[in-house]
Amino acid sequence: MRGLLAVVDPLARPASLRSLGSTRLPSFLLAGWAVLALLCGGCASRAAGPVRDRFPLDPREGLTSASGGSVERGWLALEAGEIARARAEFERESSEPSRRAASIGIIETLVLEKRPADAAARCAEVLSEGEATVPLWTACGEAYAGSGDPIRAYELYDRAASRAPTRRGVAERADELRAPATSAVLSSAEEAASAGRREQARARLGQALAWNPGDAEVLVRVAEVECSAGEKDSALRYYRDALALGGLDDAARRRAGDLALEMGDYSMAVTVFDSLAIRDPGSRDRAAEARLAFRIDNWPDVERQAARARRLTRASAALLAWWMFPEVRDARVRSGVVASDVLERRDSRVMMRAVSLGLLDVDSETHRARPDGPLTRAAAAQLMLRLAHLLGGAGGAGGAAGCLSAPAPSARAGGEAVRLATRCGLLSESGGAVVGGPEMTRGLDRLRSARALGEAASHD
View 1 (cartoon, helix red, strand yellow):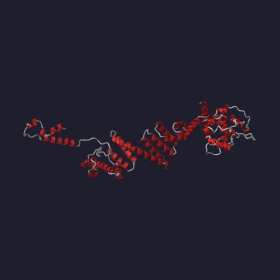
View 2 (cartoon, one colour):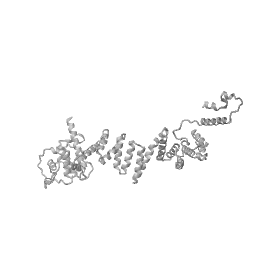
View 3 (cartoon, one colour):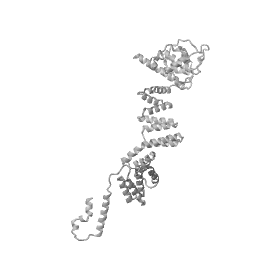
View 4 (tube, helix red, strand yellow):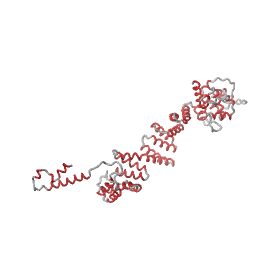
């Protein structure tokens, strides 16, 4: 710059020119030097410093029209922290080419004066007309953030960050606004889903997912909204994706496992509850239930239908004992009890084995085992207690110790048998007079597990 000024400084012209003495230089040459000097002086006065990357930004940035002196003075005042003087300068600008830059500057000053609602009102007008720039988006983003509209604030900052990818401060502020915006949009989706506005809810959920790709916590929130709206298949998919990403807390994983169990995704349920049970003993029963459900899902049709029946028949109970315990199939039969109403049945072998082993009673007068009759709670309790006795003290292990090992379980009456089976965890504490397939299958599975634990303990 000094070399350039030396060229245009008449006092510093070369000796060849000074030797002309009083000789006048051509007027056009003097005029050219004067113009060049003015241009260089302007360049020197506007030498750019480092570009700001955080609000507030120079309101002239990105505008193609020229800006007047008031806008420049307003920006200099704003940079100096003189907010009132800056707004006065911006409001003084009336020339059309500079009016938009001044409007952006006024929005910035209103935000800095803690008047976000007034700034947002200005934004509604300025955003709807003319050029959109990074300073305008950031100023209005701050206005909407301050006036309680994080969704709109993040949308504007996200545009600004996309337009100016090298402005780290703009990108960081966009990231700060993403979390409250996501929370707000998910709350809006939940309200829409509760009101039956499914399309609006779905659009909001898609918005949250687009803003947070690969975020497990957001996937969980989306799953919960879908679940509350009754869209359980969709909710399960989002839970599955969230689990694959990892990092979920135990409560979220437990909800995912519960839904998987409810929806029949037993493989997922087993994975979730087995991992929880490692450090949470309270999840062990749920893990066992998931493993049993997984096994049942792979059983033959008849056995699977019995395990899931709402009201279990006596024949179905005999079938479950036959299927789940090889000891029932292989046991020697010494009893000569015969039930006349099972001889012509397709499942006569199963029923005769249950009757012969004493698992099911036969009426002494009619000689009928009532295979199609409902399985009462007393009959279910007696079946499991007698089966435990048949297995040779299965109750001598684990939580059933001192429970199923009591002598002569076959002699226990109905009410006493129910109380004992309940205390041993084979039947639920609350239930109707008739036992369903899930409850009976759980009881038999616990009995089988106790048997396995008892054998392991005896080897030790």
